[in-house]
Image (cartoon, rainbow, N blue to C red; front, side, top):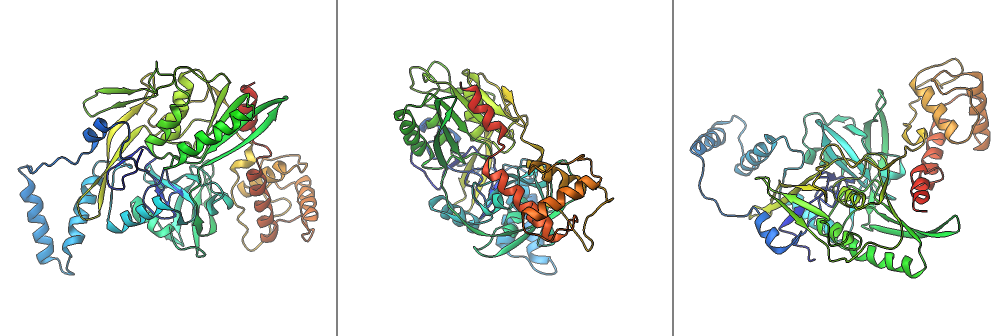
Length: 491
């Protein structure tokens, strides 16, 4: 289906990609430069798109509209410091959208839309993460694969409190993203509060070019059987085509089972996930249902005669949102296993409607429902096989001030260090936050292994090396318990 940069149906997390702002699929602080929403002209079909366009002319204004005009002239003519016409008009639009209390409905000005279109076409610059506004907090939905955000260890549900020391309190998502995004090679310092912790920490990220590559595949051998693994990082313009091509290559190579990995995938084009589901969901059951403002539900069907003749499992986590959830819940309801943890929970569809001057209003128009009519909004897709990752996946950067952390110290920082050491295979007697003699010996062993000065104390150099080692191990997939289980259940 052909992309149209003007009429946009957004089925993503509605976050902003921090590489830029617009909307790619999800959020990129991660994809939050705004990889947040990607677009599709022919979302489900032509009639549906016309109905959803929201671009109908309606010149009838409410009786109280004169009150708005009165306020406009009052401010423009009398405000002490002066006010520009465009400033007031855009403020009024933003104000109307803000009253909805919907984090997925927003206004994109001309500059934002230019950046959005630029990102759709190629790559973008930023930190490579997607963010959304969750309970009033700028929150990472997921980092993009191989992005600066992923490499420094940002995780889904991390809350961004400050950017370069400036608080984000009171800012809307667009304003927050504007502070985070920036040119390749520049640095940004984020103050992060991680889920399950009480102490914020700072992390420095060097912005880079974030390429848009969305499908990765490989063949794995499990118990002597060939198992295909396809990872989808977001649902972009060419994702379905790339997925089908790589799926066929795996099938031609004798694949006996398939794992589809959408962990950390914040969403994307609705027609992209639609085309992928057309490869798996038989035509006797809808792959999705769309519900309008009046509660009318419209099912949409594939053209497939029967299911694949090999087992399939789908991997999800808290960073899987929107289009990822459409795929996961559809596969679940036709009998395939979903492995991992509960997904993000975004069950609405946005339409981006141009305002004629290059700016756009992105507004929630519909709910999407599963094949059986379930709405997963704010609850997510529950896996059939629940698997948590190791504890060290959720550690935070170590904050060392003037004095090193050493024997007989205690607290959350020590517990964090112990969990890291344990995850790296060093022997410990405890991970409860007390710096014991055994912990000191583990630190010495780590320092010796990494050519550091062997003191048994955790100074800034040791802390930095420990953090880098943990990030490297996570990215290696060495202890990916979710993937191991997904490969297991297809055999």
